[in-house]
Image 1 (cartoon, rainbow, N blue to C red):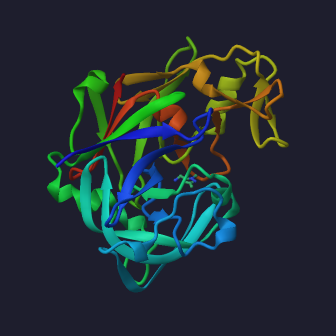
Image 2 (cartoon, rainbow, N blue to C red; image 1 turned 45 degrees about the vertical axis):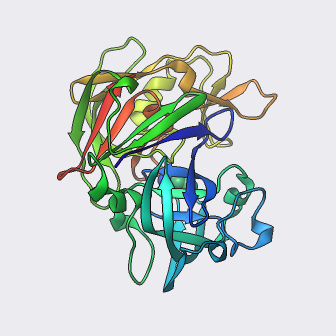
Length: 330
Ligand SMILES: Cc1cc(CN)n(C)n1
């Protein structure tokens, strides 16, 4: 089997991408954030208090003839950005881009944090990390990818995220029309459950490539690129008027500044992030101060290769044994 679905930016700065999925019988369509940095599939639901729902589509298990309560099971998740949700669990038919998993664990929210309520274009998440991270108790549940794997033509899914445009996620095949040249693979360390791998180094603008193993996670659910402070300061030293603002919680600069590109290595391959991707957003609609798409990871305890980096490549998440991640130019 295979599947293919759109990855649609939810706002004008690509803060997150959503993908149409269907749940239940008859199918209920929700727009979910496919997130390789977590492993819970959770949705706004008929059980979510109405004062926490603001425009989101909801999953109503009672309206689905194929839903089943997973009795006695609960879940609760907290993300790196402080957002979170918790609830109960059903199983139901679940499809992404024509690929169906029967009896997928669908985690129905009983409570969501305010940042989810405020994000009216996002109806939940599909965790595509390793199932070891799933928070359902007393028995943890499998991700959509783990459930689908036995039926996939190839044990892979791919992410083709785009800057200010709709991209795609494919399951079970690698579409050679979506990239150029070769795919460079590198080993994934799947413990504790993230797509953890190393960059082979970096360069700023036209500067020399600094070979250095930089371990981190490729996370489609994180907006920006978070790297060690030394690398980030080296980057913003090239930006007129840049400063690390306590007030804004990161590097800001005059929106009129010229930004250098940022290149990262995967083994021997090199991927260049255009300056426009790093000129992330104005700090407020009328401000002339802009917030950077490259920020320091020092507060996170982990480096995160989020969408600002991933959208510069075609990325293959390979569930082979051992798991691998591949990057290609596009
Ligand atoms: C909702 C959400 C998902 C992620 C990345 N895994 N973050 C940081 N926030």
